[in-house]
Length: 427
Image (cartoon, rainbow, N blue to C red):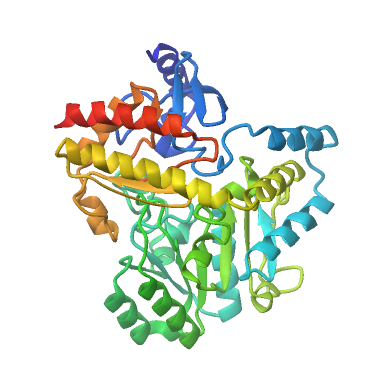
């Protein structure tokens, strides 16, 4: 079934470390050989062996419209025909900046980057430059890219491989990062009481997607906002994953909280490599060439990526888009939960917009420690059972899943039928 993928993986390991260009793709967590893909369209992907899958990764979020949406493909083709990169300003950069600022009230100014990692790294540097402070707070299980300051008890692939802290990060760099437990109100309050006036920023996934899908309480985020304001600490919402995925206003709109800085990526590039960070004008004014905080990128605001992002943002802003997407995702979660219950399998599921989390646990986790208590071995067996039936889920128990506007009721029905068979095999 996977002969061609196995051959390509064997060859890849000779020239690419681990055979992959991003660790979570390696299948180390779930076992087996990574699937190599040839094409994708709508809700489906086809691997190099000709197998077809209903896809619930969506390129880890960007494919909110479905793969290869014809209108996005058309603008990419048209833009590429006029040049793929200039290293100089373009009108498209202005247009996407205006679009993002108009959509998210927290944004007064924004700067484009080429990845989410660049966006979060730059936002933290900017917060430090703005406040003149060095210490930052992040949360256990949250992943914000692979810059040195943030690879301390990180999520995503770092959790998958059991190495929350990366080698190669100097202890003196990590010493400036304080790690707190997600959703722990007492610890949060105590930390600000002790060192709040020393903190440059707090960076948080306002809905975590890199220790699976974990939502904070409204009280927790409200308290965080209040404490940051009181202590002059910059609040950064990392919405690289949740931005234009859980709703048109992102997680900040869902919770009704305005961060000082926001990082974005994935959906805003329509599948092309892109990132951005922005927020309060007085903070953004500290960026070069206006201020002393240096940040740059040769391909930032790439015209092809910007064109794809603008068309995607136009389509997701249409009336009823997120209501329909949310309904489809909720339908899938409800049906999976019912199937697991019928099979007497401890299971829980949650979703918002086009993102979801499934856990082999009796209740939905609220933090990293609770996520770690879920049955990962049972998830791994479930993953392979679904893969063999043409359902492509994240190859890790620590990643959120994604539904697109291209997924139909028929796709959900096929997925649930496969899940019933998988649950029966796990019972």
